[in-house]
Image (cartoon, rainbow, N blue to C red):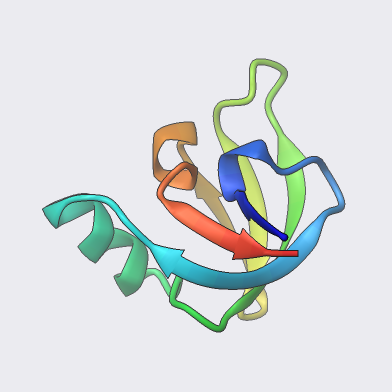
Length: 75
């Protein structure tokens, strides 16, 4: 099952399938290690859902909800 990272609940994990977005946003995500094949875990979510904190490649990364919506993850 494929789900957008922005729709994840705390504790869910998966493997990144695709990173969409345009120009600078996509480049920024790729530079931070959000690349296809990387495994991640949703650690924290702000009360209104923005921002979210994930663990990827052994470090914690905080993303805006709009950035998380550019990441498709396979559960």
